[in-house]
Image: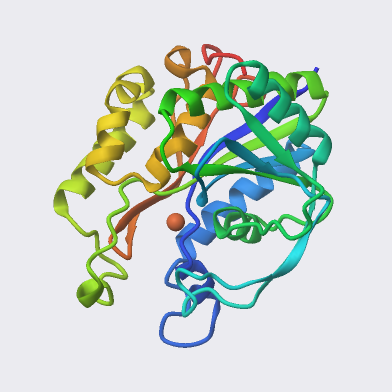
Length: 295
Ligand SMILES: [Fe+2]
């Protein structure tokens, strides 16, 4: 039987790409990059076959969508932050078989989902590409990108998609890692101010709420978090409406999940938004998780 062997909420801030470059901003996102590298190392240690990424930079207007085309290579420039993230080379291999199984399972469970693996020109967004870059993922591990920014969908639907990913993985016989790629609060400051906010949060209320949420995750108070998630996503402008996070907890067992989040990168503000890397133990391999809901 297949299994989910790793689950995490991860950052994809383009300033990590800047951090790589020579110049005054070299190294500014060292901790975020190191956190992602550790998550990548865990994927390799746990012999992951496929990484599924819920990408809050992939906006869809109707239905849920999956990109699992076999050739995921190219040169990426962000249309949102072209000055931060441009000409980034990538070379990944998609997993059309698992992508289709996830789409079929989610559709069967009531959320219409399409897997695209014959549309060569369907671009992969940077919510997928940036974490994989710093995790050091090569062509030996396959990838799948799931749209994680819904124009007008219920979080309940994304919960079902998360549950369906788990169901499909179990049928697949594969070892899978799941990444919810998105920030905590996500208020980018007004244009005239944003240049001053590379290392600052946009609103103190957002930071305090983000830190409260991280405490809930670290303490394993997932049921409490899920009760506030819709309001939190709305009031703190959760990235992509936090559909990535609804998928994550759907996959982990929702309010039955009893694991405690482990910080891989401590909280940091970036262009006004709240960011982190947090690992959520799964029962198959974490050390201290005898009571964790099995996934
Ligand atoms: Fe983002």
